Length: 103
Image 1 (cartoon, helix red, strand yellow):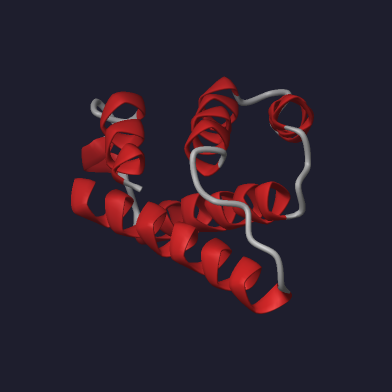
Image 2 (image 1 turned 90 degrees about the vertical axis):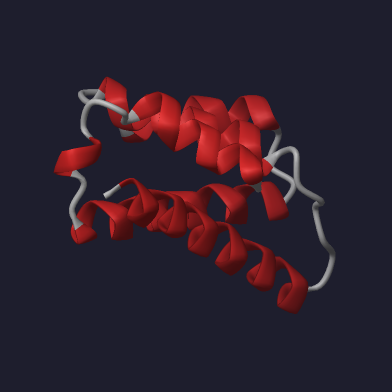
């Protein structure tokens, strides 16, 4: 999950002073949804395509989503709903922590 720190550092260094609590919440939700896809064993290529579909007009959010996909697919895919939910919640919290640390 250290990868998330690097992701945010690379994507939002110029905007770090502009990061709001709401943006951090949105980044956390994006990370959560990405990890849910990973935990459901969605192919990584399909998850990458999903980022282009979800953010067709916003290349910054698409780029962030793609970086979250890369980070999520480095994590273990779990079996069992409780472990999957825990992995997604942990990933969300790590993304939000990375964001809040950049404020």
